[in-house]
Each structure stands twice: as C-alpha cells, then as structure tokens.
Amino acid sequence: MQLGPGFFLVLGLICGCRSSPPPEPARLDPIARRYVTLALGLGRHDPNYVDAYYGPESLRVAAEGESLGVAEVRTSADSLIAVLGDTVPAYYDSMIRMRHRYLRTQLGSMAARARILGGQRLGFDEEARALYDVTPPKLDDAHFDSLLARLDSLLPGRAPLADRFQRFRDQMVIPAAKVDTVFRTAIAACRARTRAHLKLPEGERFDLEYVKGTPWNAYNWYKGGYHSLIQVNLDLPIPVDRAVDLACHEGYPGHHVYNASLEKALFRDRGWVEISVYPLFSPQSLIAEGSANFGIDMAFPAAERTAFERDSLFPLAGLDTSLAERNAAVREVIEDLNYARNEVARRYLDGQLSKSAAEKAMRRYWLIGPEAAAKQLRFIDTYRSYVINYNLGRDLVADWVQRQAGDSPEQRWRAFGALLSSPRLPGDLK
Image 1 (spheres, rainbow, N blue to C red):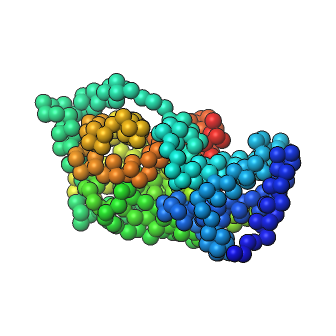
Image 2: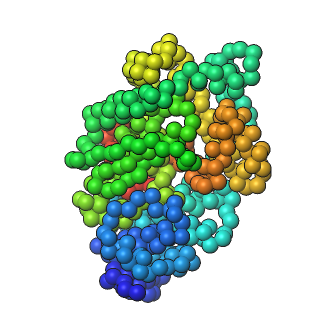
C-alpha cells in the first residue's frame, strides 16, 4: 500500500491536534487531498456516494490502493475535523474561511454517511441534519389540505380532484415523437437566457440521452472538463412544462452550470482539489439541488415562462395554447405541494407509515397514479432524506439571493453567479 506525501503531512498535523492552532491556509491543501481520497474510498462501499470526480488520477489510485473500510473512513474524517478545529480563523480572507468551513462540514457529513453505512439508523430529521446540515420544517396535513382546496378551485368539477387533475395534466403531455424537439428548444432558451447574464467556461457542453428504468426523472452526470451527460427518463409521460423544469434544472443555469462554474473558479483557477469530487449525500447537494430549482425562476420569471411555453413549446408539442395560463396557476400550487413528499418520506422512513400507506399518502397529496407513487417510494427508498434538497434547498437559495440583491434582476444574477462559483454550503446561506 503506497500513500502520497499529503497523507503523511496530514498525519503529522493530527498529532496533538487538540492543542494545535488551526492549519494555515496553505496547509488546507493536504487536508483537501485527504478528503478526496476518503470520499473516493467511501464510494467503494456506496455506489451512489460519488456523483462526480474529475480530479487527479493519482488520488483515485491512492484510494483504491488504501482500500479503507467504512469505519476507517469515518475515523479518518473525524481526525481531519479535529485538525481543522471548531472555529474558522479570523485572519483568513472570506474565500479561505468558506473553504475551511466547506472542508469541515463536508467531512462531518462524510463521517455521518460512514456511520449510516456501518449500520447506524438515524431518524429522518436527524439524518437530514447529519448529511445536509439543515433541519427540515414540519408541515401538517392541514397545510397540504389547504393547497388541495386551492387546486380544487382551479379545476372545478364533480369528479375526485385527483381525476380532474390527471385529466388536465393529460392535456399537457408531449407526444413521444416530439419530446426531443421540445426539450432541445427549451434547453436552447435556458442556455441563451443564462449566457446573457453569466460568463460560462469556454467549451462547456453536454450530451442529451433518453433512458428508462431509473428511480429519477432526469440526471446530470458531470464528467469534468465543463462537460455533462444529461439523461431524461421516459418511463412516464412528460408534461410540456417539464421541458423548462429539466432544461433549467439539469442544464442552464442548474447542475451543468454549477459544476462547470465550480470547476473553473475553484479547481482550475485556485487549485482546490476538494472541488473535483462531489459526494452526493453531503451539504453540497442542498446547494446543487436548491440552486438548480431556483435557477428555473432565474432563467424564466413566472410571466416570461408562461409566455414562452404558450408561444413556443405548446405549439411545438401540438398542444392547446389556451391552457397555458391555467397550467401555470396549477403548477404554482403543485410546487407548494412538493413539501408533501418530505412529510411522506419522514413518516415512512421513521416507521409511522407502511409502504402501502406511504404510497396512498403520495397519491393523495401529489395527485398521482399508483405507478408514479410506487416510483416515488423507490426514490425515497434509495435516497431517503435527500428529498429535502429540492424544496428546502430551493427556498434557502431564493431567500439568500433576495437578501443579497433585492428585486434588481441584474443584481440577482450577480448574486446567483457568485453562489454557483463558490464553496458556499447551507450554513453560509443563513
């Protein structure tokens, strides 16, 4: 087993770490390299843990050669946290302070994930705090019932609300033969709107593929070199407004732009190797998913999105353009109902709901059929408390941008761009 010199420097730092001062900024580099090897090492035990890696091949080789067990990863992560110390030195500049917090927080999440893989069971809220550094809000059934009442007024009729909603949404479905055309049109518009405000790395690009049989609706696989593979799941019919959702969320200014911006600003320009690995079950995911969802609103403010869908996407899909405004109003309620998935996941994972009861609750509050509800439960079984990152993450990012920039569109884009190219984590948004 061969270990790089960075490991021995970190090992030296660990000795007497309780009484030693926090490491100087330059000495964060060996800690960062060790963080990467530990993340790659944990990924050997958890195939979903490492979402992307584009760093030095030597660190991948080191992780494979060291072949740490889950408990050893946890112990090593805890040791690095001790080296970093509890506080961020005041003499660091703002970016170095964020880097220090980033490493410490991500390592804490890594240690928690290792404990979970080692057999420790955490409740939904406890797991969310340990992995994503946030406490999800609790919303009662009365809150969601009030949203269903709003939806009921938008879709009048005597049939059950779920049936009325499904019939309405069936009118929004893109014919299979037109899915690619509609998606590529939406992607081009999201990219153009993003490029009007953010400078993207030279040569950034992505490939688009259509797949089936996955627990997710779409996924961005970031490859490094400013290149993404975006896959869209065709298992279920795709409503026309999902084109803008997924084009922005997975592409511009969502995951693709976030990953490319981090690679350019932090990995290539600053040499921060820790950015080259993206652990999925970590606080970074709240920023990634939250910024991707809020990116939809950045690229397409509500009225502009409705007009674009009505005038461009509905005609391309051969759909009735007169339904666009009502669809936008329905979508607004459905987005608020998104928190219902958190509540179902919490009760299901905490043992308060059986699988069948959880599927029933998902059908009630997401107004979906049995097949879609079962698919949602498969996602929750796989990713557990990760579901909070989409809605809570979106709201935290939106609130932070609002505090930074107010209502000025250009200032909001500037703040949003700063978020995408920085090591900010949930604690930095508070």
